[in-house]
View 1: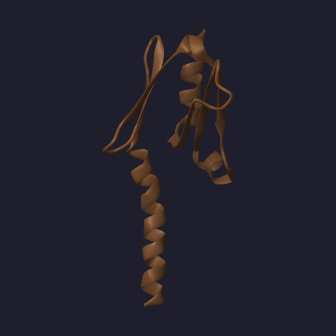
View 2: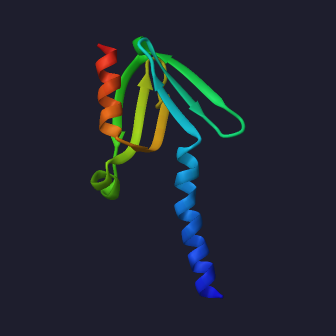
Length: 103
């Protein structure tokens, strides 16, 4: 019985990031970023490139090896990060694309 519970906990921990990935979307348009989050209830943010002040990434040990981490976007007029997208794959390409569009 304990072995079944341990394997169940592992399955939940593995499933949670997969479910989280499917509930967020980042669209890079020519003039803005659109961030959509949520599975049933949607939260949508439109951020023009002119308001973005910093784009950075956070990677842990495992994320650095596997190429995934968190993308952090800060905007003018806010003390905190406007958008933090965790568990994003190809994070370097996403950051580079946004920085290219900002110029």
